[in-house]
Image 1 (cartoon, one colour):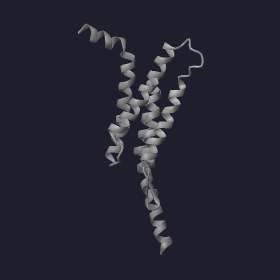
Image 2 (tube, helix red, strand yellow; image 1 turned 45 degrees about the vertical axis):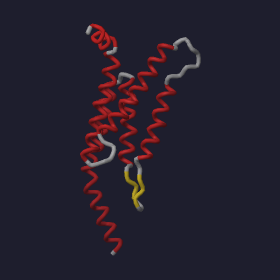
Image 3 (tube, rainbow, N blue to C red; image 1 turned 90 degrees about the vertical axis):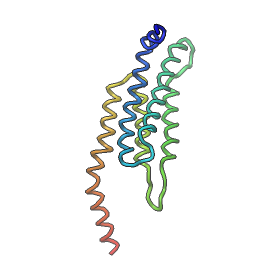
Image 4 (tube, rainbow, N blue to C red; image 1 turned 90 degrees about the horizontal axis):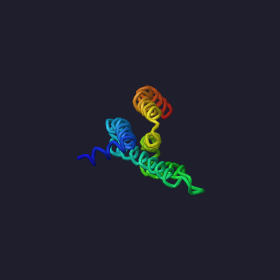
Length: 160
């Protein structure tokens, strides 16, 4: 029992980083789930956790290989951005003349950034970013509805 307690004490900072990343990713994913999108709570939580994990690994490798010349831990962070681009591209679908999934792709991309911030221990930045993402996904969606109706009415009038 003492060994487990000591493990959690020794790794409390890393555990906190990973847990915060999961929780914030789940908040964003919950909104996506509620509007019936494919990438929901699990996907966003995993993207955020994975990003945080890679950043923690980068930091640990810096400490371990501090004396090795040419070692750049930010390479791993930059590869997260590239990898998430592929995941986001897979969520975009062309249906007729309309693209679907762009918001989900953008949400996954920013969730990766939030996970990266958690990985670096930048909790304030992570929480503020999550609040802004939810503002965009919820409040801006509500503001877009009247504009969308106006646009649809204009399109109908032009066809007639």
